[in-house]
Amino acid sequence: MIDLYTAGTPNGHKASCTLEELGLDYEVHPINLGAGEQKSDAFLAMNPNGRIPVINDREADDLVVFESGAIMIYLAEKTGRLLPSDTQGRSRTMQWLMFQMGGIGPMMGQANVFFRYFPEKIQPAIDRYQHETRRLFEVLDRRLAESEWLADDYSIADIANWCWVRTYKWSGVSREGLEHLDRWMGVMKEKPGLQKGVQVPEANESLLEDKQAADKFAENARKMLQT
Image (cartoon, rainbow, N blue to C red; front, side):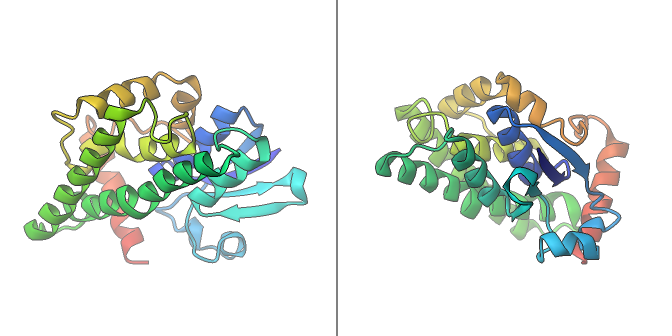
């Protein structure tokens, strides 16, 4: 059994979607980010950086793993799935995983900060991160024009990028005209494991339609920016 400490964010969903796709047994421990539970002594003992997600693999002598990308790699290696064992395949998968971790995630995260969370609207900052996110989407689109999946075979690289790209509306970024990215997104969202994974620890799909829920989410995000 694996303990998953998480919240309903793209990084949290990277872990839960991977667990679901691999069919692993896990127990969810929701972390209330707005209440600062990720800064508690108990949580910091697992992740000194005070960020979700974190897993504890009870079957491996209570091995604790933090950082979403590291969790995905660990789970893939544990099961021998979603990460090729040959040198070229593994390298290709890791490259596109790092593309998400070093590009898609940080740029969309900053777009969220300036577009959604800051009380004052700093338009040059909004433009900077939205434009860069769109550029990265175009990189994905070009790759997916030549390959069904980001790393030839379906892998943790696809899961990681999808968990972030699917939230493009929250970042205020357009996917218009990116037909290959759209094709891939459509295939990804039909995967049962991914459908389940993005409901962990709770569904938050209504943020764009429910202004009250969106405002509350943004308020909690602003609190986290100050800690």
